[in-house]
Amino acid sequence: MRTAVITPVSGRHRHLALQQRGLAAGSRSPEQYVVVAMDDPELGAVVGCREPAATVVECPVMNGRLPLARARNLGALRAMEGGAELLVFLDVDCVPGERLLERYRQVALDAEHQHSLLCGTVSYLPPPSPDGYRLSGLPTLAGPHPGRPAPPTGEVRRSEDHELFWSLSFAVTAKTWRAIGGFCEEYEGYGGEDTDYGQQARAAGVPLAWVGGAPAFHQHHPVSDPPVAHVHDILRNAETFHRRWGWWPMADWLSAFADRGLAHRDLATGRWYPGPEPEQPGEHSE
Image (cartoon, rainbow, N blue to C red; front, side):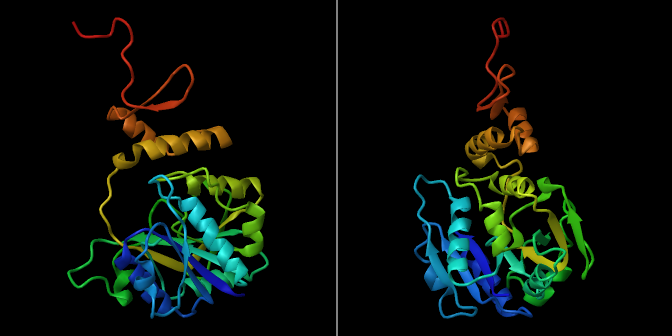
């Protein structure tokens, strides 16, 4: 089963370099490594002359918002044009565990799971030492994220809870990718496109399969919780999701934005808008 690893990238070149080293150190090498450059002209120099050899696919950014959904679709298209039968998607921050590709391939060849959306565990790493991360030491630094299933090595846990899907590390056969239909490209910027893809899989009758023994390790970088820098992207993408599926995703973030006066929900329409809730007549301070 010819395997391709697909990674969308905009900056974070040190993270990408460690991911490429992790792939080179794995028990199985990908037949293709497709790196999608979202307005990142220096990317070729980062991955060039290293193993596994990378194919760089250009994905222009039209309006300043990263087109992650389109980037993943372009990467998948290039991989399948090159004969890939198994598509493995890794976030640029994710370093594959030694047996990640081997386990994804093993489970994809199992008749029970070959039509599933395969999800490995992801561990969020602490900040690295001044010398950076050591590949061999990554499994000792953090355990799998507690918000997702983490089967023991060698086990696979089937699930119908598609809301748990995330795109940091997952794999799907080319046939199942076509059945699901790819990521919805209406999503741009931060948030929502992976939750939507989980719902597309549900609608297509594709279950999740949580794969033990296929770990990825998420390299540390500063984050804000809630992600206030992305409030407008999240509101716009949440609106798209609600129109497509009839319910609001990212509910915790939306509520946190409301608590901070960054967003409000119109009680008459149920829709979310930027900014604090407008004062009602008679509510102003004297």
